[in-house]
Length: 314
Image (cartoon, rainbow, N blue to C red; front, side, top):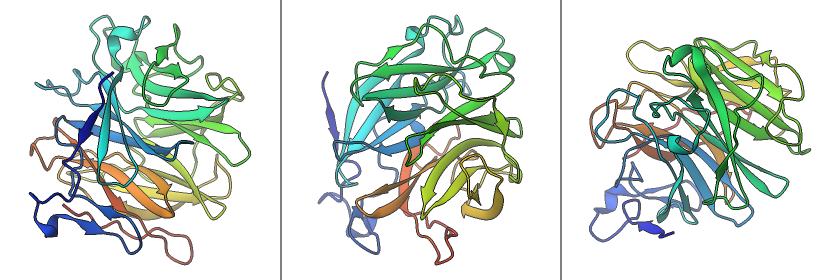
């Protein structure tokens, strides 16, 4: 597989000095969006054992027709937040035996690592009638950036009307948790060690305010943070709740990302080299909602553990 080094995120000589952004300590960010050779959205960011930061986004295929032609997931990685490698396509609708005959509708994914394997989770309908037939598929590999094999069946006990955007969080004790949601509802449950079956029934996440979609879980200083997109009129905001358990109950804390140049929002929060980052998408390159591009900015916490409003840079 040919890897492509993407310089669009670097503070290269061809770019003005003002297009670079230095966080309060350490790493310097290149201009946003940081992937410019294709349209990407819904970034799921993780740091794996090799020390690289990987981003697993969805792909807005050109030419678009709403969101139904989204397909062909790529994975990108970096060691410095400026130079990004496109590792190429890892999963497509053509690999999903149980999937919708027409393909498409490969929406926001996530990836997790356990038992020496990487598990790539993606939402996909199983029938031509999309909304009631959403399932969550899983692809497995020994490597974070290639050789994924889609399992012959979707996750059991998971799916339903507009239930999308899987997120899998592995806690410090090794227990993994699954989250997803849509249509105003978010659910979570512990996973078995096989990472593809539920250990307990799905539980509705209580205490969330105006949940839309795009659930993401992270942990900071012993507290759990559930972030998601709300239904703010005109354009989603990213908001969050805090709790003492991976499954709540949750206390709503407010906005962490104001609307971007895209009507929809979706993001992930990750720590890398001692700093915290928010990955999200905007429409800065296309100025159209159906052609999105992923971006990243520094995320800061207040002394009480709440999150400051993230400042978007370009």
